[in-house]
Image (cartoon, rainbow, N blue to C red):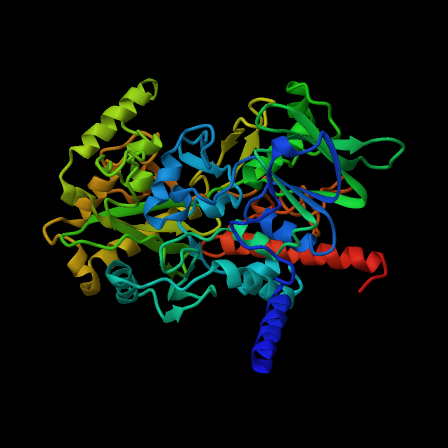
Length: 583
């Protein structure tokens, strides 16, 4: 009996050490509430707008000592099988309903994209790859406390990161990369190292997704309130007798359209963590942005800040589809080749690639076929003239796809993503409605180095496909040029095609460019926020998310965005407690 008591005491001590002293576990959070339950006026020490990849870890951390309100415009990821199950990866992106976890937007470049509208943010929509940023990226970002950076990564990894199962397709990609010269082999690691490696994943061994929302298990439930379907409209300001405007509240509405206000107590702060589209959009709606643009929309200017919405970038992705003569496992990103010329090579595969989009018709309903992000279900009808890109046109394309031979859906994609990128664009308001997408232009490949890197990446993919380890997964009679032509015909964007796409790789890159959802910028450090992520020109307001980045971190950014939420939460806590004379 005494031994059992000792074991229980040791177990309790361990959980307290890693941050679970008074925590609850997903999905049974008592602090999750609908915004309709919120009072008309409320007060908190900290208010965070955006329950996404940065907002969730930030809220968990701050709630250890202070009262926190986390506002999320979407719903809960728990109980949504499209989010949870690996095999349903494409289904959420194809869901165009007003309550979908994915809100589609089309950049002015003609590339289909998506932004998250769910607790957990982009970690509920992405392909799940988990990998840290390089030490050089950490240094350039100004995260000077290296020990805290590593501790913050580890804090995230305890709950949401896993080693993936390496089955046949992904193993062939790994071995093909090595045979193609992307060396050395670095094994399984979260670290960013030149060569080929197996990275982490947020999908567990059962194919179930774990998201940033799971990090709310670290929270103190007595100090945290999470409001779902709470759409922030603008930040409220204290302008009375102050040298600078001070953010002191948030105006938001619930799903019935009722307006509510939440204010910060003395010494508190508001943080925007609404992502690379949402954060600059809300700053502008709140009167912080380029004066001419705000006045054109009839918005009262609080601070003329011309750099809000500038520096928008999206890492271009291009891919080659490889049909397989043998069945392949359903897999998302597990292996990456980190090249020295500035391209990352990754792959995904599956029979009826990436899911069903069957619409839940029951066991008797046949699953619809799709190519995931390459499918007409996502609205990417590049070969259809703009005025003919209607729901009816999409329906016809889906029907045609369902009539294709089953073997055409067996295989996978090997893709390359350009590092950085160096090409940048901008974001502008379209309307005054925070639910509407802003206008965003990324200017893919406007910098010639990005284009050269894409070409080198595609050439590397061609080498991988022709290696001995990959021989099992390609038809020997289908040439590389034929594979390029096949890929060109997929409806991956709204751009016109050219007849020389398979012979001119620069044209191929331009014509088949896609997103990998790693867009960033709009509130960059040194331009819109300072090194502590405080918005320049105002008090009491920070931005902590991917909108502050100049370049996408690592091969895939989610690990670093979650780390940043934890990292800055600890720094803010320490700063506040020092000011109060506490330890």
